[in-house]
Length: 538
Ligand code: FAD
Ligand code: SIN
Image (tube, rainbow, N blue to C red; front, side, top):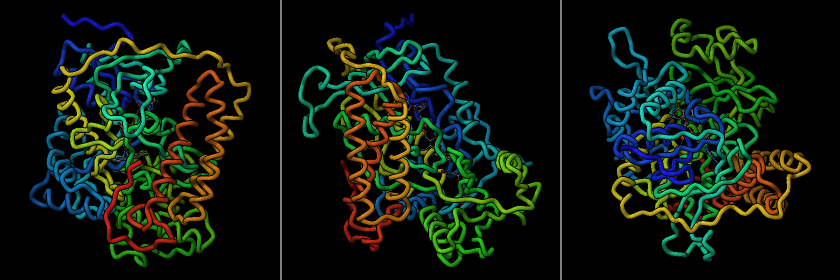
C-alpha cells in the first residue's frame, strides 16, 4: 500500500511543471508506484515556456523523405561546431519513440485528410519534419501531460512554491567550493507562497526542470517565470554551468511597443512562405544567405538587427499577404487572432516584427543521462546544457530534447535510487534579522536595469567594451541586491532579481571568455571563428 512520506520529505523532487518536469514525473511515478514524486512550481502548473511553444516538435517520422542523418546534419550545422555529436545522434534517434509516448498520452498533432501527420518546416531544417498542433503546440502538449499526471496518485503537484536554493553540505556547515568532491543535493529550501514561510523539502533525487532565462532581456518571448532560477541556484551551489553566451534571439516576435513578453510569430510562418521585408519593401534575407528567410535563426536575427540599424527602424516586416488564406487560417489561427486583436489583418497588412530573447542554449552542464556535477541532482529541459544545441539551437529541437532527456534522467535515477538517503540533519531556514523591504522600487527598478544592460550591451551583436560595461554595472547591482537579500524577508521578486543578475553575470563572463564569433555569439572585436573548439564552463 502506498504511503506518503511526510510533506517535507519526498523520494523524487521535481522543480518545474513544463514538458521536462512532467514527463520525468509520469515516467518515475509509473515505475515506482510506492514512491512519492513531488513537483514544485512557482505559479500555476501550466504557466511554463512549454505552454507557449508554437512551431512544434522536430522529429523524423517520415522515413521515405527524411532520415536520422539529415536531422543530425541539420542540428550539427546549426550548432556551428560545438554540438556533442553523440548527444545529437541519440536525441534524434530516440526522438520518435519519445514522441510516440506523448501521442499515447493524448497529445494530438495535426493530420491531413488522409490521416498522415502534417509536417512543418522551419529555419535550418532540410526537410518538413515538425509535428505541430496548429500554432499552439506547447499548449496541447502541456494539456496532455497535466492530464496524464493526474492519473498517478503518487505525484503531488505543489503550485505557488518558490524554490530559493538547493541544499548541499554547505547547509550542514561545510565549506563547499568548485573543487569540493562529491557535492551532494539533499533537497531544497522553498518559499510557500500561501504561508510566506520558507520550508525545507528533503529529497533522495532532485530534478531541476526550471526552464529558461529570457527575462534577463527587455524584449523576450518568454513568460514572466523564465528567470533562470535553476541555473542560478546550481551556480550558487558550486555546480558547473556551460555555454551561457549562446542566447538565442527569435527573429520574429511581434513588435508592440511596451508589451512584455512579446508575442511570437512562429518560424513556421516563414516555412509556409512568409517573407521578411525592410521598410523599403525589400525582401532582404536573400542578400544575407542563400537560404534566405529559412536560414538558421542566428543568421536571420543578425540580418534583421542590421536592417533595423541601417534603416533606423525598431522593426522589420513579415509579409504574409500573398499566402493562401485557408491554409494560413488553418495552421495559424492563434497568430491571425492576435494580429486581428491589435488591428492588423495579415492578408492586408504586413506584420511588424523584431528579434527577442527566446532560448538559453547553455545552462546546467549535464551528461548523457542528465546527471549534473552535483550528486543526486539531475537537470533536464531548457535549464540544462546537454551538448545538443552547441552554439545555436535548431528550431523545434528543444521540446524533443526535453522528452528524450526526461526519459534518460528517469532511467538513470531509477538505477541509483537505492544509493540515496534522506539527510535528516539539515537545519531549518534561518530568517533571523530580516524584515519586509519598505520599498518595492528597489527591486523593480533594479530589474529594469538588468534587462536594459543585457539588451543594450549583451544582445545580438557584442563587443569587448560593451561587455566590460555590462559587467561593471551588473557588479554594482549585485552588491546592492546582496545587501537587500541579507536583510529582507524573501519574496519571489527579490529572489528572481538576484537570479537574473547571476544569469547576466554568467552570460557576460562566458561571452568575455569566447574570443571568437560562433553561432549565436557575435563579437565585432573577434569576427572570425577560432580553430579551437571550446565550451565555456563556469
Ligand atoms: P518550462 O516549460 O519553462 O517550465 C519551467 C517550470 O519551472 C515552470 O513550471 C516554473 O514554474 C518552474 N520554476 C522555475 N523556477 C522555479 C522556482 N524558483 N521555483 C519553483 N518552480 C520554478 N521549442 C520547440 O522545440 N518548439 C517550439 O515550437 C517552441 N516554441 C516556443 C515558443 C515560445 C513563445 C517560447 C517561449 C519557447 C518556445 N520553444 C519551443 C522553447 C520551449 O518551449 C522550451 O524550451 C521548453 O518548453 C522548456 O521546457 P522546460 O520543461 O524546460 O521548462
Ligand atoms: C517557433 O515556432 O518559431 C519557435 C520554435 C522554437 O523555438 O523551436
